[in-house]
Structures are given as C-alpha cells and as structure tokens.
Length: 289
Image 1 (cartoon, rainbow, N blue to C red):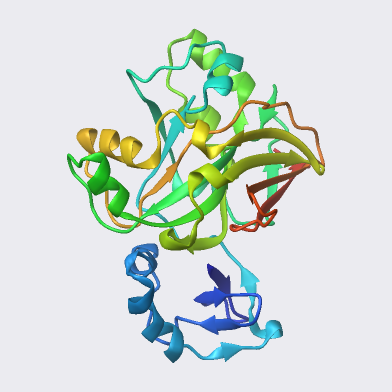
Image 2 (image 1 turned 45 degrees about the horizontal axis):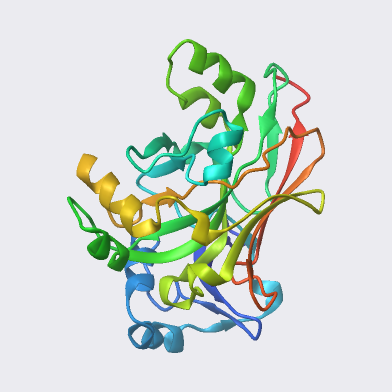
C-alpha cells in the first residue's frame, strides 16, 4: 500500500508499506503530488517494480507521522448509491439519474486524526463509510469500459455529514455544500492499494464501525452505480483529471455520533482479510468555537 508520511523536518514522503518492510519511494524519484502517485499506481505491476526496487528500505521507527495520502484536484461523491441507504434517507433508489456532489480537499483529515466538531454546530452528525477510487488518467465523455481502465487505486473514506444542517438546507432547496464541508468532515486513507490488487467486488463487504460495533454494512456488489458507470456519467459533465477522487457512496445504517466516538471503515474480504486496512478517526467537540 502507498502511504504518505511526514519526517521529523515536516517533509512529505511516499512510502510503500507491506507487512515485511517499508520503502521510501520519494527518495527513489516519485514526485510529491497525488497525480504523480496516481500515474505510478496506474501502471501495470511489472512497470511499478523498477521504482520499488530502487526505493531504500526504512526501519519501522523511521516511517514518520502519517499524513493525508495526497491532495486531490477534485473530490466528487455519490449519494444514495446503495438502495437501502437511499430508502433510509427517504427516497427510492434510481438508476435513471445519478446523485452526486462535491467535497473540498480542505475539509479532509488523515487516518487517525481527530474530527474536532465546533461547539456552535447543532444537530446530528453522521459518519458515512465509503470506498474511494483514485483516478490514474484523465477522462472526458468516457464509456464505462474506458472509465474502468482509468482507475489507479483504492482507499477507504468517511464522508462525515452534519445531518441537521443538511436537513435544513434540503428544506430550503439549498445545496449540500455546508453539511459536507466543515473542517474535518472528510477522511480517506490509510493509503492507496493499486487497482489490480483489490479482490473482485463480489468478494468484498464495506463496513462502518463505531466504537467497535458494525453499524453500516453492505456488499460492494449492491452498488447501484459501479465505478466504471459512475465515472462515465461524471465525465459527461466535466473533465476528470489524474489525481481526482471519487467517494462511491455509503451503506444503510447511519446513526448519530457522540463526543468521543471512534469511527472506523474497513473492507472485509471473503477470507476475513482487510485489503485496505482500517481507516480510523475519533470525534471530539472543540473546547472553543
């Protein structure tokens, strides 16, 4: 998995992390931008190997402090992409008109960072466990097959939502911008798994946990808009670029969070493994506004 970490001087490095070792890909020449990482991840495994072989290994103590795994150009999110979640939000699922919205990169925090909720924010806050894709090539007016070929890598995401704010904005026919983009109301990571290393969707279940309890769960096969189809639709409306992220929607089971809750997202394979690891963020009310 490709992760991002800060060294003692605050410099960012791309690290290739396995159970056996960690290698510094930045010292081997991988550029600092997320688009640089996306282009490398988008290559076939044999093409990626030369950089891996050139990257120096690091001791566990030298990994540094984890940071957000790259800053995207755009973050687009699918709404109501699991039928059961659409129904719990009061609408019927549809394959006629895909619902999507934007999340700002500035709103996102890394794995294990604290979600600091402003004291002035009233109403319910929900976590939304998601699978996130990283685009490895630009797309415009793409077919689903072309779009599928442009996926570089996968990570986990949490699309935190100020549900009370969202409900009020819906009543006013306002967009969802405020409820989805408070500081800290998005997380993705811990790192990027190359597209060709993820098991088939039919073998994977997305789970959202709070304090160790599974609250959200659904097979990825239940997605209404699978990644290729979703990307093709988005590419009709705008140019998608290398390094863009797509949050692919959340299962049913969203519930309100409380101060101190630990939110986790994981992708469970048939053999019990977690191919994308676990994304963790704890919720805490800020002491000052």
